[in-house]
Amino acid sequence: MRSRAAGWGLLLAVGLALPWLIYPVLAVDILAWGLFAAAFDILLGCTGLLSFGHAAFFGTGAYAAAVVALRLGVAFPWDAVAGAVAAALLALPLMALSIRRTGISFAMITLAFAQMVFYVANAWRSLTGGENGITGVPRGEVLGWSLSPAVAYYYAAFPLVALGLLLCWRIVRSPFGRVLLAIRENEVRTQSLGYPVSRYKLIATVLSCALSGLAGGVWVLNHGFVALDAVHWTTSGTVVVMVLLGGMATRLGPLVGAALVMLLRDFLSRWTDAWGIATGTIFIAVILVFRQGIVGTLEGLVAGRGGPAAAPAAPPVEEAASGLR
Amino acid sequence: MATILETHGLSMEFRGFRALDGVDLRVEGGTVHAIIGPNGAGKTTLFNLLSGLLRPTRGRMLFEGRDVTGLPPHEIARRGIARSFQITSVFPHLTVLDNVRLALGARTRLGYAFWLPERVLARFDEEASAILASVGLADQRHRPASALAYGQKRVLEIGLALALHPTLLLLDEPTAGLSLEEIARVVDPIRRVARERTVVLVEHNMGVVAALSQRITVLQRGRVLAEGTYEELRAHPAVIEAYLGGAA
Image 1 (cartoon, rainbow over the protein chains, first blue to last red):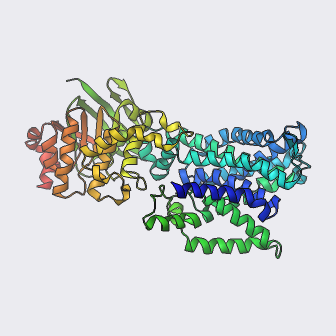
Image 2: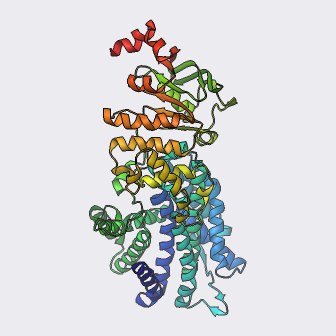
């Protein structure tokens, strides 16, 4: 019990100290991508659904937050929350269609939908600015405090992201999350027990997409700028890499993965434009050594030494991949 | 005794192959009704239709007098038909207790509660323990299902079906792959649960069929070949030729 409280305290301390350890804009990026990855893991780690189109929801959240902040003058945090709502509204029809398939077909359909969103964002210039994107998105103020300084925005975004993360973690460790795990483990059996599996999947995907949209909202206000790369398929790929790197179906895995990728990208892009090659190589190396991701493998080691019983672990990467029929 | 389950002309075709061809079945409430037949006779297909995993290409199914043809599996489960699977189908990475909790939770709406902590599932623990004790798995409750021996998984499979409190229990080869000693451990729980509900049993082991069932339907190539008690069928020439004769 005491070590758990210490763990939470340490996590909070790292969170609060982060903008003094690295520059604040990068710190907010880690928060936003960490939330995105945690929301994504509700589907990948917990439900066993690989969405390859989550950029559509992250990006929709970003565009929606930018539009309501810039044109309607909606203040923080409601502009970011509007991003979550927009992503959920988009997810409802798209995911209702996508979840009719599983495995690799689900991944392909979500990718196709995300590409549609990309082309719509490109073509709808009056709303999205097309290739130029939307610039000059104001952060506004909260309770009279201007959020223009990057550090101030970090501390405003921190509680919002923390709430989002707590919701992600609660979803995974709730009675609902148990049913999602059951679907991951054995979909036919779950249905035969009397669970309407499609309805569960739809709720899970909409929750995941809404939280991804919230992450997009936090992210866009950080940069004051959003362009097509937010809805590009590489954004979908990045979040997959983050979750696999950190560890699926672990509490901290998505955060660790997001932090690692963002820090590596920041560090390497100072030296070379080919930072993607380096990140990819590191990704392969880590997955070869830590088959369940960094956090997943470490948790496995601790549990193996008679530590507290770990939550139901995700299968190793190759087992998850072999399930993608 | 009233008829609890009937099928009329139930047929299933897979790309021109008739797995089931006009099967009429009547199961009386409170009995154990065995379905036997050689491999490929359509026994598992029949179960997949009865539990909603497949939709029949023709024919109707009535459960407690109501048409359940073409209902999805979760709806059929809610009406009171539970099944076990021939190929062991439990949740491997979850503990034995969590497996049973899931089955118990299926009758509630608690599964939608994504805002509640999972400790609320402890409300099922008492009943789950009783079920695990009745199938002899009480001491295994905290092990992951994947760590169980094969025979124990088969028993857990039955425990999951029991946790649904079904009026009709479909057991697909509960003794498949078990040793003689393990078979005895499975037969007892089945006999006990059959006192309170109707059981339809697909089984290859004739000893088990004779010991448990009051009525037997013999399937062959997707059709009903014969129906009767064990004694009647033992004397039935077509059955002897098609099935029992081949085995003896």
